[in-house]
Image (cartoon, rainbow, N blue to C red; front, side):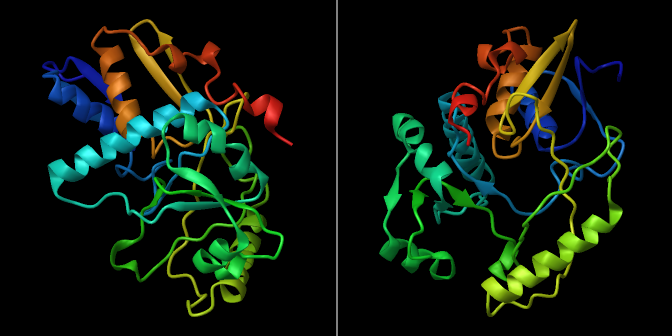
Length: 264
């Protein structure tokens, strides 16, 4: 740690940088350590989807707080960070999460086949059911001339190495075939390939938590990018001695409150 640093942050991903930003706003001296390229680990990639759809109402509330943070950053930096297109969720999962979203004040509801066909004609099967999150947003690649498409994941060993290296090539081929079939008008040939690494906690693939060890705070989990403004502020408050939010403690099992009883 630098001699004049009050707080050290290990990792220059979106949450680490958001925490550093919140700490500097509070007047703390901060040093950020990163062994690679900033924003290139679990935060890698140029585009994300921002959604409020979660089974756990606490996560919906957290997403609402994060959305306000993104909008404040837009005002401060004069840059659009979240588009205003809304998010469509197909199938039972999105419909199941409507009550939690509405309870948090999110503008969301079920849409019929005609509206789905108007928004996503290629995916509007006759019996398709969908939820529309008006407050959800996409983050398109600059210029709206390229799109990020992902269709599958692959398991890894405990050390992070891929179990089946050939599986990555197979996934790339299936993704290209999907674009060619489902997104006519786009050139299906990839201009780049990114392998996205995610961390899933035992109680929920949606959850995240913070472990405390002496003066060290350790964050782990999934869906961190969209929650970054709210997470950064919460971690900054905890680092400055104001305590960690109760829902962020591991024993709170954030993400699992309804997940265990509502998953198929």
